[in-house]
Amino acid sequence: MRLLGKTAIVTGGAGGIGKATVKKFLEQGAKVVFTDINEHLGQQTLEEFKTISNEVVFIKHDVQKEEDWNRVVNTTIEKFGTIDILFNNAGIYSTKPVTDYAVEEWQKVLGINVIGVFLGMKHVVPRMVAQKNGSIINTSSVAGIKGSSDTTLYGASKGAVRIMSKDLAKEVAAQQVRVNSIHPGVIQTQMGDEVASGKHVTTTQLAAGIPLNRLGTPEEVANLVVFLASDESSFITGAEMVVDGGMTA
Image 1: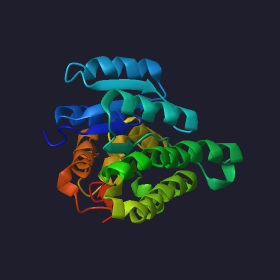
Image 2: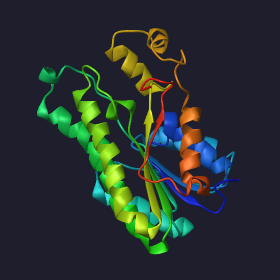
Image 3: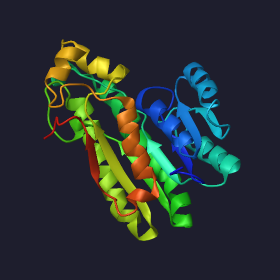
């Protein structure tokens, strides 16, 4: 029970990496508020989670909206009293030659992938600073570390998450609040399928280019998030943790 007594907020928690992480958080004793823009899927997932623990709440949430973040944070405090962990995981993928993009597409992706992360940190940090404890984990990507064709927009958003995490880590370190980013490679999720489609290959062909010769699983990423959320990682902050099967090696 590595997270016993801790309360977590997880965005994008109804599927993929977010869902796998909420499940592991609950199994490790955490109380969890998970959010998603898809209310129907969120309610379905909530029923699954209740077979593990009753200390779980779902909230429909648009991460780009400050009023939604206020509601999520206030509900978490009212229900569980503290916020010890924030997993800023919600995000969307985009692939296209840079000349084909409209400004509106940049605004949409940056709104979810960057502003959503910023708002989560803005509204949770004061709670963590006041209690002089907390762990924030932000989902970036290998695209935030290395370049790849046709991913200028997605890479820009994930590069921003990487540096934002390091900046905030310095800002709040004296208050014992830790901030780290994780950088998944191609994972067996809907987004993984979108990556393969965008490169006009199958996921099997995509896996052949990964040194471990396979895609990662959401559970493998969730294992890393549990570690960063736990006191086992108490001296780790401002780090970029890669979970990519060797892609960036």
